[in-house]
Length: 80
Image 1 (cartoon, helix red, strand yellow):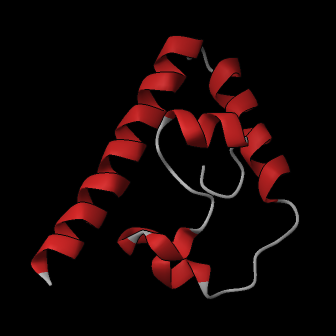
Image 2: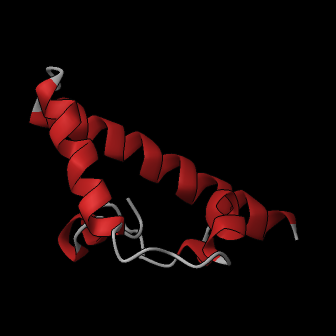
Image 3: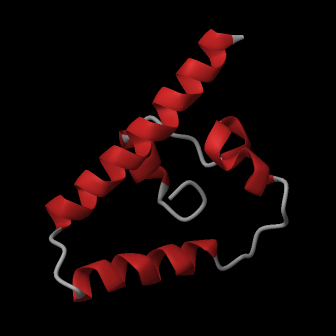
């Protein structure tokens, strides 16, 4: 989501495409990323649609992921 999602999607969920900003994705951010992140994201989106997820359900998944990333980021900042 962070590296594969469009700027519009990220903005709508108040996220940035920099995984190092989020506690759960910080470790993976140090690894070299593939140029295929966006195509992998599209493949996952397509697979979700193929198995029957509606656009609303996919949006709900994004909302949950964004909430987790932001809540943990906030709690991590608050803790220190």
